[in-house]
Image 1 (cartoon, one colour):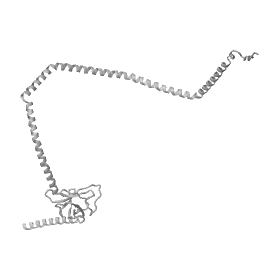
Image 2 (cartoon, one colour):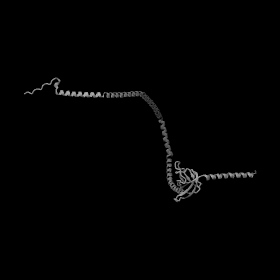
Image 3 (cartoon, one colour):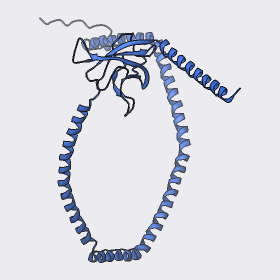
Image 4 (tube, one colour):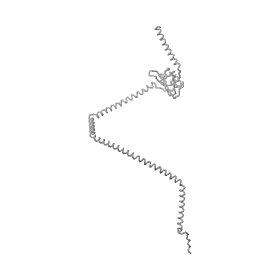
Length: 307
């Protein structure tokens, strides 16, 4: 086989592979089922049929048509085809977006919520208006105007601040001048001399404080030992007192049982005492009326009245 024949066979093979790949891709796109939806925006600048439809940043379809809504001309109706099984839900929001700075406008749909109900084919996707270039320009103009006024105000304040700064620097120069430096040096020399004189006293005071702290530690240890020694006798006394209280409680309980057992006898005794008391009262009354009955057995006869 000649070289020309080999080259021709190679070219035909490459064309065959390319044709097969193109046919496969076309069949894959045509065989994929699309679902129609629509949404409404008041501003759809740059959005045209064939624009990409993004779901969470992933391309899932194309814009089919962009036209004024028949029911409300102030709104723009956008028809779109989305791949089947795309999880559009009631919380998904459609708005005008961009894939990149240099790319044309696209329709961006948020992922919404997994708990929300899925949208049926042909349903209306909730929308959210994006700021237009005119609105952004107007806001930038307002910010620029405010910035000009703010810059003018800041310049005025900066003049005052610079004057105050100059005054402050002058005062600092005065404070840090040679006369004040000499005064500060004299004060430091006096402080050093005073420290040299008072250092022995400070050392003695420190030693005394150390000795005092040692005595305090010993005193605390002695107090701890005393408390420890007294703790055990106090515990024994409390235990004996508790036993005494238990015994007293038991004695009171026994006395209560005894009193309840002899309750009827006490009632009889009280009744007998009451009877004896009544008899004594009768005897006392009888003695008061007939005192002679204590020494005589018979009552004397009544005296006759003389005639």
